[in-house]
Length: 313
Image (cartoon, rainbow, N blue to C red; front, side):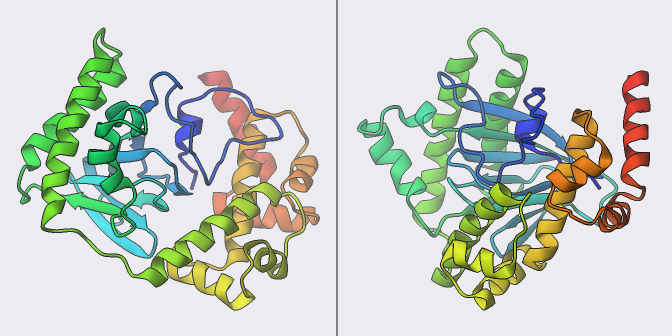
């Protein structure tokens, strides 16, 4: 299984020793003068791994279904379903096992496009009540919900405008997203979701842990190191991973290292042994076995397949 990363999809730069897999993706979407990006993601044989960003995210399923995880909550979304993710919401997206295909489109946008400067009335009156609401992490909108057709039309218009880069794209985006937020505010007036304080606390801790692990993955990392970095106990580290990600921290770290190894195999000329060491594996045999368990072939065979694929593309 491979991994879809928004910042990899949107950027063909060769990062060499620093694969562009980020847990905090703030600032990776769009340009400074127009901070918005749109994506078409097929996660049938892939997934979008755990991450967060200051930008808001909206999306809709275009084929089959997807499984969206936000903190310790799981949502099975069907074709046509719409999702909204608030700023800095920890989330991941996977294939829905019951569907033969899992394809969605998303919009990742900084709130400044809608609210302007932070001291503006638009930002203070319409954006802050949503962005700063700790209880609102996500919102799912289905065909049965009021204003569904209008919201779907607005988001589709935004996605198409940015994707096609039409002449007055910026005006369309700002107008359509403003209309979306107008509807969103009214939807939430009498039906504001709630999130348990314990869940929010664990998500905050997990963000700190992931930042540490992703920064130091090439080094030897123990459970004690992870706990110390997040200023929590080892048992709390284990709880955070179990409750939100559903696997052990060491298991997650191994998979993250393998993920970076895949990137290096495909994008650098380093030897397999060098890549093994750069990704935190000091035992080459263990690296090869772990790689084969996940990707179905040895690192060397994977490299040869990648070379052949590049020749034929």
